[in-house]
Length: 506
Image (cartoon, rainbow, N blue to C red; front, side, top):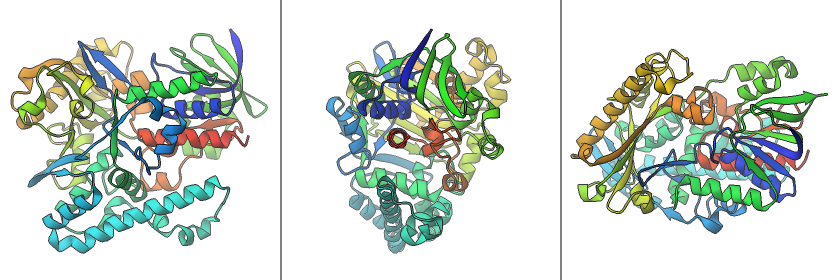
């Protein structure tokens, strides 16, 4: 079976959907091929006994008016059909000595921090200002690129000084230049789990962008969950003549005379194309194309990539309203230590009794996700792929869900998170109607992301300074998604727009 399309997009994650929607709106006949049975990648849902569980999204940054994501959501048709609920408080946190709710209004949050840490008032103001300067420079840089302005590498620090400084620094070093109180540093760093690395390793530029996007433009949750966003973008693709085909796992990208000429799937489908866009990471793409088609330098960079961490998630459907149990938080970050590097090491060791943990109540942000009087709760921690000999499988994933060792280790890990949550929510266990546990292997099963990564490539200082380009040595083969732009659903949609704009010039 053979067909032809102007563009084939591999993967219906948000980056692939976004790229396909922009290409379809530009008049190209687009076909999206997706491994899973639904669109969205990690932006999808599952249902059990009347409870709807969002797989991953807790809060969408940059989505409100004035935010950088807002015009993209408008372009993609999301704002026409998906209401966005602004989260306030934005989140809450608990560290060893205190607990606090973080208001959505940045000035109110600043005043709260100053009241708690009066000796650090100057540092609080200068750190917030420095992060906003980074966001301003990144905005200027993005507008310059969109206008075709290419600033020489040597002139970058002069034109974008805050951005240049931040992207050459770790978040720990960047922050320490402004505040020194370890409790305050832990508060400012609470969102590090969104990016998958502790402050000592994480790119300060990336963290500053994420922090300001949430705290300046607000955090939002789509009514209907992240799957509603995926379906809205899918509809835009279809309305402009494109197609999205499911259960079609691309196994090969054909190349002839230095150009991609088509793709093949595991079901025998072959589509020839003038343009191929991949939502899969560079390493996966290299294997689908064949290493002989890439220069050694490119292969060395790709081979050096390490996937970011994965996660362990416990999904709970409760027959009680957690608000009546005294729980009033949409999202709650729990840290057992002020040493966030120790927190990260605990995660890598699979010490789920101590690793940082998030409790998210979806009922507060999207009440329709649970039956009347019930709640949907999610317990989450970052987790490594290789825990307990790859979760009891030894790396053999054939039929892994039936493997008794896997089932036992998964259940034990989930139980450890549940025990911790019960200390904050007495009576939690008695209210459980539905309980599902997902591991890094679950993530891989649905996404095919190496290591079950939820952020693509590790978002270190070096990796953010030397990102993979959306362009590859094969001129009409482009890359999009977390391995290129960095992790996060907002970033994914932005990456899709970037690739579509590059494609317009090919």
